[in-house]
Length: 519
Image (cartoon, rainbow, N blue to C red; front, side, top):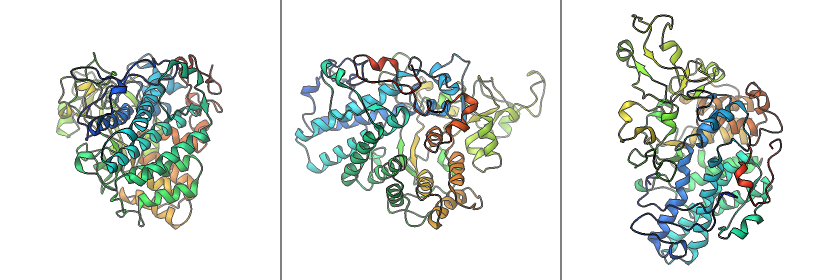
């Protein structure tokens, strides 16, 4: 698994926790010449390292799965995208997110399950690490990384599902499953904050080149600041985020973070782990992923790049002469809404975020076998086609290097980047004051936009334009109370859809109750 760049070996865990749907008798299995059971593993530093890598592994599901990928699911649920694809039954888990017909029976179950598999791997590591004979400093770092990872997994879980079980030790017996019940969100947030505060102490300030993709002190601090903001602890959020952002917005922080000079540079896929990247998931085009083993541990590429690509995209001779990108033929998911396209009209970030395929296709009344100088491309409409498509993570044919390219694009995705933390800090400051103004100005100045008076509304608008398609919009709408109005056209129901339903399969033999409004 080359999900993260420090990966050297891979442990395939059994499903130790997917509440109610798991087989807790299943043992830890290690790929190789034989099988090693969990009780016989974690004997030394090498095996501890393999366990650490396995704990990181589930990060890759963010853009490395089909309808179970949180990036695609959250984009589809936002006002910035429709699910798209080949039709209303194509990747149904994305369709039900997009039209708010989502239920416990049709939500993609692996979104929940994959996060809890990540939690389970972290819990096993935290239970095993104390007894492993290894260098003390390295053990402290491994422990810190696992706590930060567990915090990350729980942060997404509580934001998406709200009422979730808080499991902090391994579940190893079937008899323990009926005891599983949900914790109040404030209890989950308290544990997330505890994990991150403890982790930051022992995380490194900088990462060596071969370690990129691991948690650093800056990444955990940024995540803590974001968690505090969601937990309505604004003063604490501003304090943590200021550490990450530095004394002078637009300058280089003590962690070495700095806005990339050009917004477009962020989407040059060669610029991995750049100065603006705080926490980033690495994908590879060198895995063995194919349809026979996909979603079973060998999915290491960025699948979202294929899913969000334009269907049957083809450049005409005129388009080639105009130097249009040679995009792959994609599957047409996450069609950009007219609302986002309209909001971004005239914004310098439009060209790196959206392609206006409707205009580039020219006059559709002219047959394809007839000359049309306005036709630069041809493509097949997606379901819910708007004429606008998302291109931040778009793959081109030169990116195809694997035998099955659909599942193996080595295009990284950002989880947290500096422009995000600038705007989060400005919000935590109440959207007022000179510091908040400077943070907002720095984001706008990078793309050549004039300052606007800082306010919460200005910050929310800037987040939409700056971070479009990166998986933040749905969360932003819910936490700021805008979801009911902004998502009404999609069928969002206030008092219900602020949380997603827990998959039906997870209720077997537990004390859990379904979220409000869902059967």
